[in-house]
Image (cartoon, rainbow, N blue to C red; front, side, top):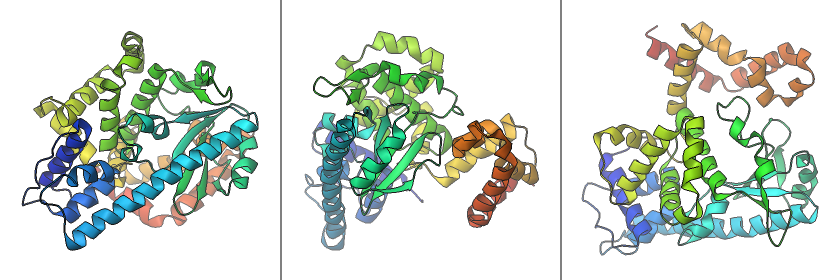
Length: 378
């Protein structure tokens, strides 16, 4: 996506005005309403921008007005549906005596001035260990399509068209992630809800650490968007008195996250508070702006190139292809959990991966190989 800096700067200023509940500045002449909406949608921050736009003297008109209002009406509908479905899912799962832990955006929504401001693509939960298979008939009864269940080590995915997506997590991070150890025993640290012992919560310290873990995972692979920095600013302002920061300070060095948190603190303050946009922040700011809400293929390619070239010693396009297709067993187990019990299936599943990933997605594979060749100068 081609992103104009004037557009991104103005989008940040609109979000800041919403966060601070102050009057926004008028739109600069070199910023178009359509490009602004496109970038806001790319980052899933349309509603925070829209709230400030409604306060402007020079509001969008005609086709631009229609586009912004259409996005706003859809987001209103999705927000209501997600909150209602959240109640239905939690009620059905807990009535079955199964522990459920809400995660990410659905946890933070109530702490935004308007729940609408915290847009989310799906709703995430962790299910009590050993009971995730029992959730399948419950979700089916609620009208969800079990579109991707039992195929990965970490999550089951459910969909209810046109707007609902739900992820049920077996674990928060796969063993292939560097800091998976921090969440491996997370269920031992969950707390019961006062009114419903099967509805679980995390300590605010763990909510915050998981926020950092989730941000870093996406940031290092395909990129993380603006809304995660808004979340971060929320933690450091509205939620700051709920968190034991001394405890957090003890944990961060064990995750090697001291510098990561410092960057996020400074950038969130520069964008939404009274901080200064320094030269050191320009690079991560640009990366986040160009990442969108969920990262981009190009950013993933950069991460993939560096990992395979530097960490695994891959020197050629053939070597890159081989490493990508014939991964080590630990990484294959993430996509094919059956390998945990039947390791002898590894060669057969390599063949399955070859056919499903290469011949089923040749365009994407070709882009990866061409990109590797360009970066490697071969």
